[in-house]
Image (cartoon, rainbow, N blue to C red; front, top):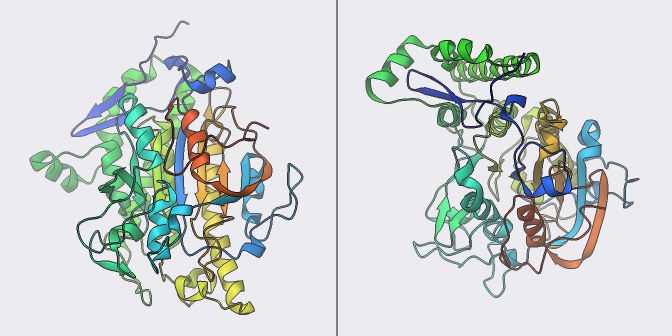
Length: 446
């Protein structure tokens, strides 16, 4: 039976609600840079940037061997289920995070420079100045193809003014995305608000009615769903069922999280309106990112797990001391072990995200195959506050343009901005430079 062609911009509409659809076979092929390299490619590339603060226990992070035969280190071990989708990139540098005569403030500079390749102006006033970040370069060029140009999320709120790090404005240590040199983009830490941004929520009487009825967004689009299902083949119907199940599951988890009592975390102000379980908070945000990519709601996302200099403790893994406090370990073996455990906890959440993306079929592969998920920090060893030989991972195959499952080591002082240039290429974005970049990063295609 011949099926109708479905536009990629099709949405299911209901009361104050519009739900985007995942990529379906009925939508047909999509043109992209990667399609020139991989002729069978039908889905667009997506890019995401995940940031974790305070550096790493580098001895337990860096593989001892290079190439495809590398072994996962203690920190990277949680990535075993998706090792074939992982690139470990050693030797990259964030020169903009270095002092350059400005003294202290390594944490603020690290987050501010990570995606910009710029050296932020030292100020705790309103005269902030940094650089445009790679995600926003991409959003400016491809954002008109999706409903949201980009999505900025996180799991720790932060001030947008005031002095947070040795004379640097708080905006630097809590913000990764910059639309321009003077326009930082704050992240959203409340999963409910992210959900509403993705799937719509009206205002006034409609919004009040919806809250009063406490219905799922899916209930409001039931009629549209029935009409669409009759126009789809069996594969697309199955995919749509799985997608709706994911939405329903997230709704239930958000509702459960809102009903739980607050748990006071030592030395950390728990953000209002978010899950009190930190792992659940991270995973809810990961699931929302997956849905945003699956629906082609956006192709660009930045995710700050915790702010630079964060002193969050991790009782869930038996670490009661603050993260920042432990990062100044002074080579104390016990403190370094706890840093390793925190690092491994973060990588475990990355593995969760990667496995969710890998479980979603798309085209002839999976959603992860059509993603580039960069993960890392612009601090290397938190005790030394050095910004070279950074801990950086790249997950996904960029639509068949990245040969993953390897450990690559680059020459000393290779700008991390070169990695961002390579990712932009795979998003059909060509620019002469970004920050301190010297060209695209070699070796990603083997």
